[in-house]
Image (cartoon, rainbow, N blue to C red; front, side, top):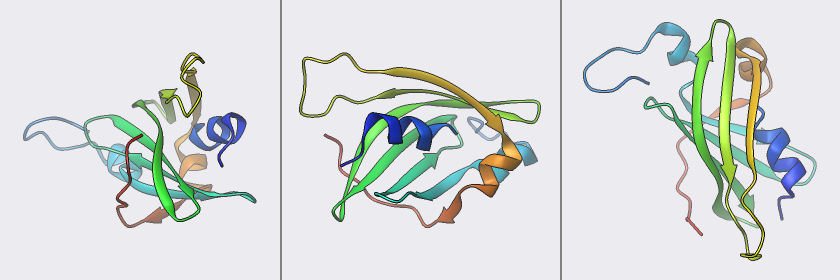
Length: 119
C-alpha cells in the first residue's frame, strides 16, 4: 500500500476551449509513470490544469490524490490533496510542491492512459 510519504514524494513533482497549449505545457501533459522500490504510481497531468495521482495497489489502480498544476517560468508547481483512505477520521493532507520542468520529465516515464477506480 502506498504510504503518505511515498505519495508526497511521487507527486512532488491546459488550456480550455479551442485555445492551444503553450509548447512547455504540451511537454508535461499526459500520463506519467513513477516506479519506486515498493510500488508503481501514475501521475495524470490534464490539459485543463488538473492532476490525479493513481497507485497500483496489487494490480488494482486506485486514485489517491487530486489537485492542480501550473507552470511558473521553468518550474512546475503542483497543489494537491491526498484522498482519505480507510481512516475517515484523518484530515486530508494538502501539499504544494515545485520542481524544474526538466527534472519532472527526467524522473518520470511517459505511459499510456490508465483507467482507475475512485475510492
